[in-house]
Image (cartoon, rainbow, N blue to C red; front, side):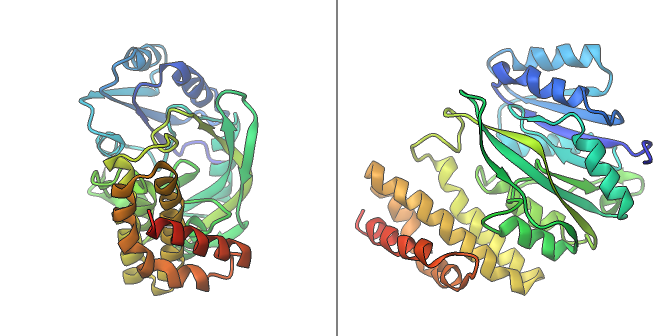
Length: 319
């Protein structure tokens, strides 16, 4: 394979000192070494920033940005300004990769002259180290539209951006890479919304079932805390924007996008019911009817799941 292609790896960092070294060691230990690792410390209050600086001093492939805390979207946007690679990817700073991850991915990208690659991932419990689930979708080659469809499926590559690699060629103007920015209005669902925009020009995406990314499930992470915050509720408008943008570019994807939106509304609505959070339930209810039909038309969803969704919606409406 051609090892002259540079891969830019964007790592937003915020208060992850117990996990950061394992993450960075997994990057520096990759069998594919032509990397540009951009660490954006988003105003950490622990020693995460110092750890970033330490790694930058011992390996020139690491570049550190220190900024005020504004959230993961602005951290990634700041890192976008530093990208010089032929490809770009993302890693959450508490996760880690298999040693051959990027070699496997870039080899497939080069073999198929692909614009992007989606690959499998594992969900690992932070306390026990045990694998809870493995996620993988179809294999082969597809268009940008098919790639977004795969991201919207309920069992597949998901709408995350850390198990994907993207060519920067489409975003280069006058020798400068200008990636589309993430929307800081969304704290949850922001990655899938950005993904839909990023995939628009891509004609050739390769899908690998190899599980190369390890996603750490922490009980104290923002998406797993069993309470509602304004940040968590931003997923509602994020999902609506995903559906609207999908409909504008690839009309056939509006139904899958709205089906996924409904599933997420039900999941969050059940939590609102369990917590007796009337404010959160009130924010969720108006969006159920808009997305319900797409969910029940989705052939990927079993009758049992649909019946459970009906029961859950009744509970949500009485919260």
